[in-house]
Image (cartoon, rainbow, N blue to C red; front, side, top):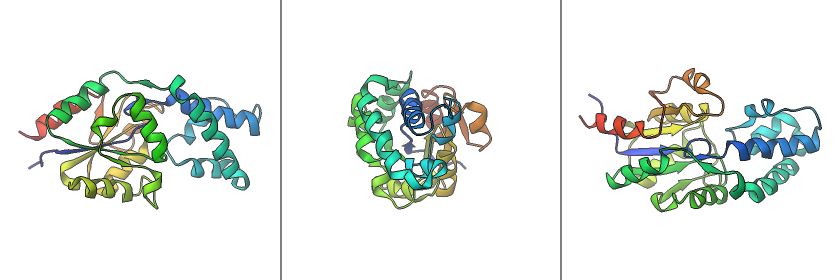
Length: 217
C-alpha cells in the first residue's frame, strides 16, 4: 500500500523558477571571456545542475575559483532581469501550503542565490526550510541534502517526493529513498529526464496536487 505523501522537496532553478536563460547566459558570459568562440548555448547545457565548482572543473581545473567568481558576479547582476516564473507554480505551492503539506527547497546553489530567487517570485513565505550548498558537504545526487531537509521537516523518505528538472534531483531522490517527479519543462528536455525513471513526469506543476491527493486514497 502506498504511503500518503505529506512532504515535497523541490529543486529551485528550472523547476520552481525559470532561471534557464539566466544560467545559460551566465555560462556563456564566462565561456566567451575565457574561451572565445569555443562554446555555444547548446554546449553549456551539460553544466546545468551540478555545483559551479564541479562544472568548471571539467573546463579548466586551474582556474575554477576565478571562473566561479566571474560567473557569480554576472549572475547576480542579471538575476532580477532574466528570471521569470513557470505557469502553475504559485498556484500549486499555495494549494499545498493550504493543505498542510510540508515543503523544502533542496538546491545545488548557495543559499544567498536560492533566497534571492524565492523572494523575487514571492515564494519565500512558503519555505521555512532551505537547503543549499552552504549546508552540506555533498550535493545532489548524494542523499545528504535531501535527508537534512527531511530531518528539519520531521519527515520520512517514504512519505516524501523530490521534484526537479535534472538527473541530480531524480537520482538524489532515489538515493534518499523518496518518490521522485521530473518536470517536462526541463531545459535538457523531457526525454533526457525520462531515462532516469522518475516515478512521475509532471507536464504542469499543478499535476503535483493530483498526485498528492491520489496518494491519500
